[in-house]
Image 1 (cartoon, rainbow, N blue to C red):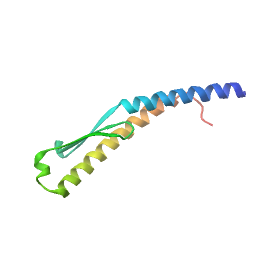
Image 2: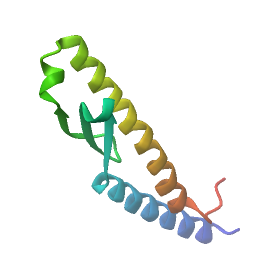
Image 3: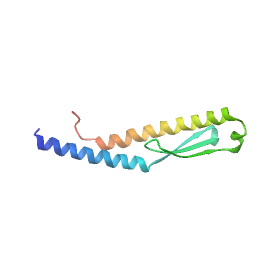
Image 4: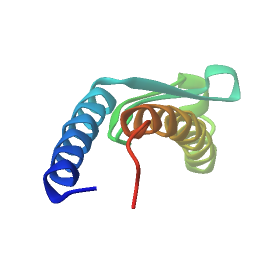
Length: 98
C-alpha cells in the first residue's frame, strides 16, 4: 500500500471518528436506579446533564441519596459504554488498522 493511500485512509478514519464523537456528544442516555428513585441523564461522552431524585429518597438521608445516585450513574455508564462501542465500531468498520 502506498503512502498516498495510507494518508487518505487516515483522513477518512479521522473524519469518521470525529463524526462519531459528535454523535455521542448529542446522544442522551438515562440511568435509572431503584425503580426511578434516581434518574441520571448523561451524554455518550459521560457528561452528566441532569440528576432527578425522588423526594422520598431525599428525606431518607445522605447515604440513601448517595446510593441511588451511584446506582443510577453506574446504570447510565453501562448503557453509554454499549452505545460508544457500537458507534465507534461503526465509524472504524472496514478500515484496516495497523
